[in-house]
Amino acid sequence: MSLTKPGSLTGTSKSDSRLTRVAAPVGAQDDDAILEEMIALEQSKLDPWFQNDVSAYVAEIGDDTTYFDPHMGEKLTGEEVREFFSTVYAGNIPPIDYVLTDPSVAVRGDIVVFTFHIDMSDPTSGDPLGRWMVSKILERTDDGWGVIHGHFGLPAPPAAEAPVE
Image (cartoon, rainbow, N blue to C red):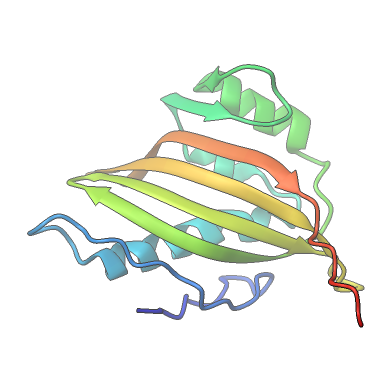
């Protein structure tokens, strides 16, 4: 089954309908609804991120959140993650158009593993800039979804075009 993802909150993302359905445990919230919720939640952070505003990502980091970033050689936790985002990325993110692609969820009670790609392109030329590979583990709390762990993999270079014969 294919779903259509909700539109971007600020219009910087582009539509993509390649969504993966993964079964949720019996009695859990419908997995399609959780997938849609995860996509909207992530877009609410990516839209400002690609406008050079890291505050939404900083706000999602709890004291026990762990994070792997390709620009660091080690695991970061809690305040280290918030400081990393605030000092390394803040002020250094150029405007980029993106499409969140291939999202999927694996649901286990109040825990969700959310995986997706971020395909990036130059907003002026439309030229592809690369792809991030992302996985997040989130927990449903009384306050919403909290990030337990995040991992952003090195961006893959844009795929080479097939030669024209």
